[in-house]
Length: 169
Image (cartoon, rainbow, N blue to C red; front, side, top):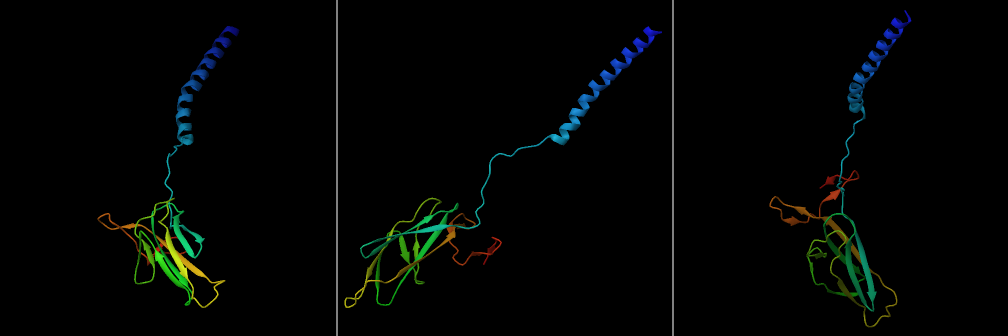
């Protein structure tokens, strides 16, 4: 009788092991469903606007102005220079053009990390006054490069971003 019990125990044990082995394959598949993940490689940074930095250097009675694109997308830049009514300003600006709105527009697209060419503003005060202190104010603006349906780049100086970072015209 002991032999019969041990024989039955062995058969039961072997059946249990076979059942565990057979179900292990099915369990792996179902566990794989719950534990499988996919990784994505690469990224694309989105920039909601352009960012530029004004670089000014003063030598004698000249202000040397450059605009550096510190953002992540191509942009167009423009500057406007203001001074008091008794201060005369003259410009030497290769690569820049003055428009009727008083702004000086840089002719080329400024790529991220690049700078515009240097605009030199010569400052001349009145002959009869002592010019110890005066202000020459430079205002610079930038706008992202846009493309028309033919792929030609253009600037939209009226475009702005709202507080949520969406385009608003």
